[in-house]
Structures are given as C-alpha cells and as structure tokens.
Length: 126
Image (cartoon, rainbow, N blue to C red; front, top):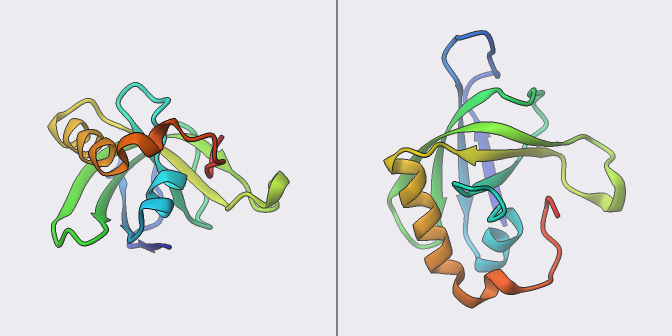
C-alpha cells in the first residue's frame, strides 16, 4: 500500500515546486506505481490535488524497509482524473529528472523489482 502526504499546493509559473511524500511498503505497490516506460523512470503518485502537465514537483520517496528517503525532482507527465475508467486511482505520474537523484531512484527501483518488471500485470498508468 502506498501512502501520500502533500505538504504544499501545486504551483506553476516558475514558483517553487510542490513537495510530496510517498511511502511504498510492498513490491506489488512499487510495481503498480513505477513508470519504466519513461526515459529517466518515473512514479505514479495517488493524489486528489490538481496538477497540470509540466508542473514541477519534488518528492521524498520511501521504499519498503529502507529508512532513507530518496529526494527526487520531477515533472508531471501523466494525470489520472477522478472517476477514470477501470477504477484507476486518481493521481499523477512524475517523470524523474535526469540528475543524480533521478538516476539513483530509477536504479534502486529497478533493483528492487528485478524480474517482476517484465510482468503483464496492470499498473496505475498502463
């Protein structure tokens, strides 16, 4: 199960990005949230807050039993609105920036998921 905490409303127009906190505590939740089809990797964040494509966000990502939180900057590239088909969770997909934190997050997630990444199970986005 993933838990989310929003600490600021989203902002646009050059202001500071909003800060999100996401705790993923199982491999199945990580699989459902990870977006490997994005060049730098990305993650789906369940939220009811309104975002626009291109909004910048900053997240603190906790993965399973690891006490360290990964600080990751990203850009909103996917929006699942409330009431989406197939009972998909409302939220946003965030593409990791190509900086050191984004590269480290993608590497860590891919390491945790291993062979599960080739699964045909549905995710929050595809």
